[in-house]
Length: 82
Image (cartoon, rainbow, N blue to C red):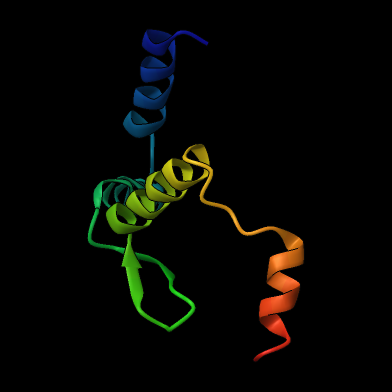
């Protein structure tokens, strides 16, 4: 479905929506745009916002591309000291 068709379809739903559906749509749009919304937690329990979480993903991908990895063998050796 093309973007314009999709927008028109959504607009048709909005035009005929009851109050319950309008509240649901509003909540969905607001949560989509909220970068300060907590979406995850670190292993230490620190909350991460959507923006921070996405940055963590970018950072992890960069580390992988640079070859900053831990082999299974190294991880097994490290875990013996825990």
